[in-house]
View (cartoon, rainbow, N blue to C red):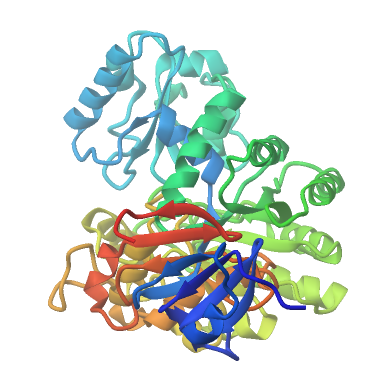
Length: 543
């Protein structure tokens, strides 16, 4: 059966990410699918007077980007409604910005903020008294940029019932004064234990923020995401936004699993979520495990003790529990999505996946480890051997004086030279997806890809300092990490990830050719057009 196309794109430099037909000039769209890919002349034959013709003017055409590890709903609301502290470098700046926000928002019951850098501000500087001085008696809870530590004032601790005799929560802790009372700084799950006492966002506040950031993501060429922590209410909100016609991103999701909650209860809940949310726009397909924290807060798990203290943080699940939980979810055909920063956490995750395969047999699981900051040499080949995908955030692999100083003290020079070994993992056969972990850092895929290629800061040149440049990757690996490999990590490569006949017409047109420009120019790329299922969700005025 032949179709007259609804839309055609002609005169394009199309990189399809399809291994069989890698390049083309044009493609045709009918409804929400691609119906033909080929030359401009061939594709023009599928058009009539009612067909929309888009002239790509020789520009690069790619599948829409997919960011397969971020916290879209939560971060959208935080960034839209909280005070942003990402740019603050001194205590005066931090306090002045908080004081301004409090003054300009007298109606807010709680003062909430996001973005302080734990490499600059720590438990010795972020005391409850300092926060008390600018918050005027209202409770306040401030999140670090990576959400692995926080800062609370006296009223917040009072409302949460945290005192000198309050036990530490599972997988978290409170910094303490000599008398045991809370000092002000909180770590890991202690943040969320306190956050339960603050007002939640209303559904409409979530919808307002999500709708805004859907458009912003589309402007940056993103058509699909994976929300890395999505409980039932989060999934309900995505579905509602979709029903309102305001969701312009394909959402895959993973549900967080807790070490202190019963396995059977959590397994039943995630099975229910998978059954409820299982279509091409909103689906939940995997189980999320946090095995450790982050280097900056000293909560990453290392195989060898820290150089400065001779200790290391404990795993958030011990190895027997990892084996038990991984095997149970693997048996039910869930993908495992595992937060691993230290080499101890990476090793434990690989051990757990190997155990699950021994118990259940191998299948097309595509279990993935996220972050992978430090890997012991013997674990490199295990990614390919076990079929484990890497979900990496290359933006973090750039020189950063504050974080680099912490890492050097904690790990020593030799281990620091092995941080974020993305290129070596790829060379040893690991399937690699690139992502942002937004709101830990920017979601901008062009800034992220530039860092993946250069391991240098924005605005750098060939002579600028680089962070472990031996682990750079090339542009083809980076683009596949945002397109076909990203689709594979979310089990949606049959419908997205390449510009192939029969797949959804999720595509972007860019203003420069990423394959031929200098790596140092990638961050300046502009998206001219974004289509989601053939529908225009962003167009630049220049196209």
